[in-house]
Image 1 (cartoon, rainbow, N blue to C red):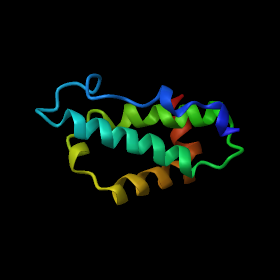
Image 2: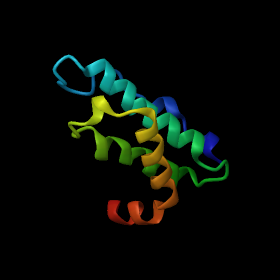
Image 3: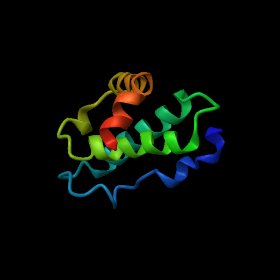
Image 4: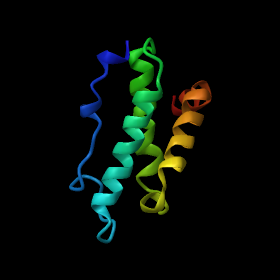
Length: 95
């Protein structure tokens, strides 16, 4: 059911990430990598509302993190995997 969530609605450009002292393009790419990774890793029958809430957590969690420009794909993958494996905990904290 994840096909009901349009990933392009979440993707960001460097114009919306704020001031990152010249790193705006890199930050936008990292945020978008989080979105794509979660979407790809999520099971096909995930509840669309749940997937939307999980995707919303990317911006809430990462946009203010100073380490964001330096993250490697493995870091992003590990966080996304942890998010999906522990989604109840994350969603509970969000509500």
